[in-house]
Length: 81
Image (cartoon, rainbow, N blue to C red; front, side, top):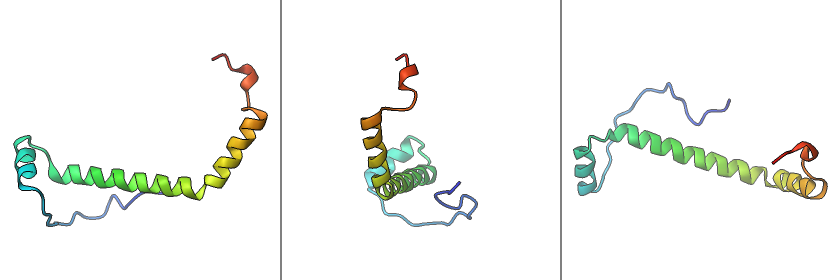
């Protein structure tokens, strides 16, 4: 499976600039800034990858939807919902 990034790559210290009040309130809540930023970046990478996939495959998706519109979906005659 194609991964978004190398999960075994070493951690690298990084300097960031944040809103001071946001930082103060986050620290008061014991929010792990590194873990939170990593998760947010993973989510953004996944969203970007999904959007690129949808764009690259839009003609196939459109063709499939047109086929289903014209012929129905496989197994429709057995569906009970």
